[in-house]
Image (cartoon, rainbow, N blue to C red; front, side):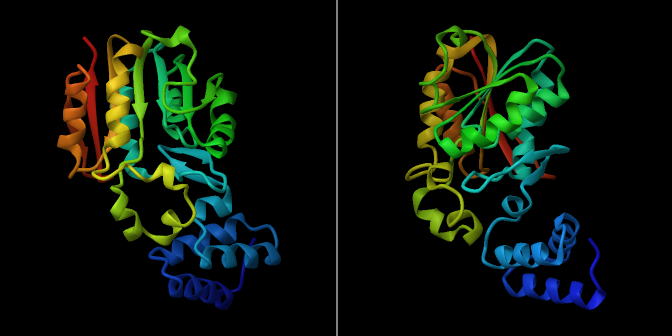
Length: 260
């Protein structure tokens, strides 16, 4: 829909006053997505209240795709595209890909889009995330499981996974209070809280990964620049190699390990 210039300016001003750094871009997106003036007003109100923009419009742009996003689900960040890039460089048609701590399933969906013929699986502990991931993954022929890390996976996957891609929570518990309100108030803490040093869940993944990886298979975990050395040590403790890669354009960090 279209709006008058003065109405557009008022929307931008309201978004900026609520703390939006990209008020102009957000206003354009809300105006584009709204079907009626009433719907636009409701969407602006929800954004001003702090609800993530992606939840309001129902999708997030990630690695060139529109990923379905629902309320109560971790919103995919652009920095996570570093995991996709590195995974795509390692993948082949027919590779078995497991997106663990999958959230919306964005990482797995993006790998599937870039590499034809991958066998795609995903898993998350949050029921809301599993419902959302199924909307993104199942149309691609993938399967999504609900449970804690490897626990819900079928035994038939043991020793078959070529690419285990993980965006586990890595925010230190004490740092969650410093996050933007749209994250700490609208995304489940289980998707953010990585324990005292932020690496607790990553350690659990790395400790169990070798059992599920195929020979020569790879584990890729997103982490932060500051925590990369701890993440890499977790890989080594789990019997994997560990290499840290950075993508400055998205401010993303990934640790890549290989099974013997």
